[in-house]
Structures are given as structure tokens and as C-alpha cells.
Amino acid sequence: MIIQHLKKLYLKISIHPITLLYFLFSWLGGYLKWYLSTLCIVCLHELCHLLMAYYFHFQVYKIEILPFGAYLSLEDFYFQPIWKEMCVVLAGPSSHLFIYIGICLLTKGVYQDYLLTMNMFVFWFNLLPLYPMDGGRFFSLLLQSIMDLKKL
Image 1 (spheres, helix red, strand yellow):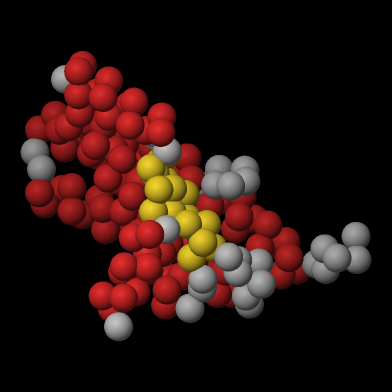
Image 2: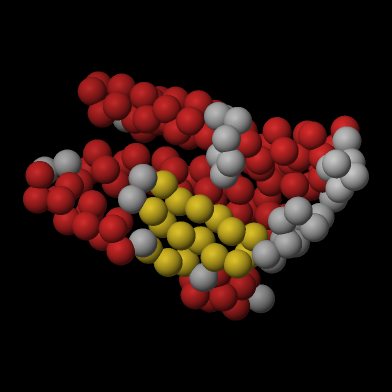
């Protein structure tokens, strides 16, 4: 069951072509470790969205790895109860606490400082109240929960 589920998920993951260029240029420039580390933080953030979506039985449309991030697209988002959608949205930002702990336990020095900075940047950037950031989605869901937007 789990293997089949993961196989279906694997088919829904795509890497944006420009991301491959970033891999190449960061490798040629000697910054691959730094680029992949930042991308890993973003992917862990998206993984938490994904796990919460699976917990509530959302249907995953696709996962796209972008040059500076990742995007989880759900087929039935905005068709579920608002509280479930809020949980899926908040799973990403809440992941940064665990990422922070992992960074503090597993790294040292300049690399640790870099990872902590990137973790904080990704956290705050995702909280911006702009769509499609988590802050924008949460704000939209919050508005939907207190007013009927269909009547407007």
C-alpha cells in the first residue's frame, strides 16, 4: 500500500528546467552545497505540507521543484473544510522549528549560520500575506471562515 502510494507520488514530481541550470551553475561556481542545502530546507517545508495533506486525504496534483523553492499543488484544495486546509497551510511554517533544531544539532560554524539564516528567511518569506505564499493562503482561508465571499 505505502509503496504504491509513493510510486504514484514519484510520478507527480517534476523539476523545472531552469532548476537544472541552477544546479549546473552552482556546481560550476563551487556553490552546489549551499544551493542544495537551501533547496533542501524548502523541500522539507513542502514535505510537511504534503504529510498533512495526506493525513487529511487530499488529492495531490503535482509537486514541482523550482529554482528557488518547491510548490505542492492539491486537486481538492478549497473544496475541503477550512480548518483542514488551514492545518495543511500551517504545516509548512511549523516545520521550520524542527528544521532549526536539526540544524543546531547537526552542523557547526559558518555552515550552521548560513543554514539558520536560510531557514529563517524561508520561514518569514512564506508568511508574507501574498498568494501563493502560506501567509496569503492562510489569510484567504481566515477571511473565508469569517465572511461569505460568494455573496460579495
